[in-house]
Amino acid sequence: MTLTQLETFLRVAELGSLSEAAKIMGVSQPAATRHIKSCERAFDAILFSRSPRGMGLTATGKKLIPHAAQIMSEIDRMRSLAQREARRGQAVQMHVLPKPDGRK
Image (cartoon, rainbow, N blue to C red; front, side):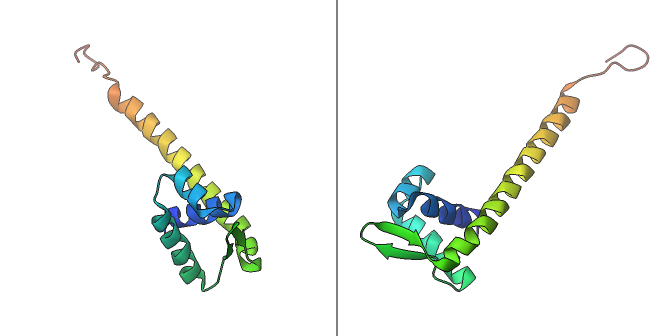
């Protein structure tokens, strides 16, 4: 399972609509459908009930939402940390310090 697939799971759960989730994520509806099916295969469980009015979480899907949200939250924290470290590293690389004898 990929992070994009996990994000699709969360978006569809939040919006109750596969097409709306796909639109927000900038992917096609068939791609979003594949993401959900991949999640269901990975967990060996049906995560959504499908109806003409949209998609609702099954009992299993509801139980997995907090875990998926926590994983995505941790990924966001990791990205922020990596970006801060990269900025810190770039700042050091961009400075040119004079040598002790005053030359650059």
